[in-house]
Length: 386
Ligand code: GLY
Image (cartoon, rainbow, N blue to C red; front, side, top):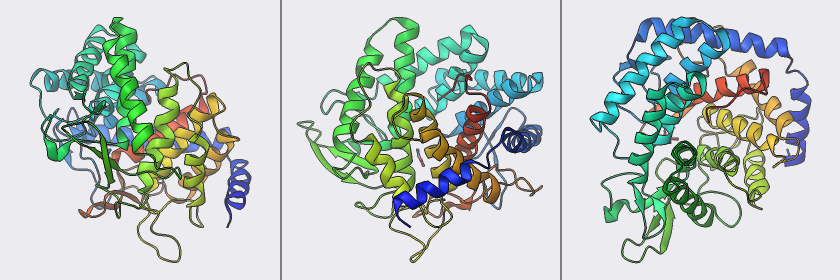
């Protein structure tokens, strides 16, 4: 199928997405979240499921915000106080995590705090949420490297072996932009803007495909080379990396006066071009229907949110309808709606293939972005958390 044929198919599928269909998907998601909440209480689900079940964990990973974000969203959709109560308990847990600087030596502070405190602030205007957003922004800002103008993703700050950024970082930047809006202190915005520009100049290749990570020379700050961490190879296209760009770029443009980068359309094209027959991507675009591997439904859920964001400022033609076609495939063929014992919302995600982690399983970010996409389609005026 050519890209035009795939788009035409997505547009045809989009016609099947009615309000009734969306509500049906939303209802089963909320039911699952309610059941999961009864089991997790004030603890957290693991990053990915095993045999369709999440482990019960502490607030100790980069993924805990997805769970809290789902609770906020369930509260906004249903108005049920039980979601609000547990979400606020989570906010307390996120405060303790900040106070003790527990597992925060990485850049995923935006994933954690935009979806917990940031979402909480949007919903309740609670002061504790606001304070946490600012304290979390300080933690993220502290990872900014002047030499190279980027936020260091992982490892000890300044470690020459870890002197790199990763494409996922785009989703961490809104926390910094919002911190400037909340505090009036421009240092957050300046770092976010510089990091964003560095991402656009390095990790996105000339042909609009993406590296997962990009290294810099720690002495000079000059860009060195692209490499993968979770993809199939350094030069391959990790499906979720491409999705992080599809979402991350329009998300950050919301805070900027400049037009969307010229290559944004080509970045989306790469993703659609590589979709297989059922329109749900393999975990890396080295694979296809002739040379198959595992699917990553979470990459599609993220791309859908990206297209919905892009549709707001007309950054990609027919973005909303294409997103609708994609969500139809997820809802019809990748959802857990008839699987009572599966705690995820979306089947067939991949966490880290090379490490054997979360392969062909639900994961929290797939669940979260699927839910956010449903909410955006059901209620276009809803204030998004990411
Ligand atoms: N941000 C890490 C991942 O996408 O797996």
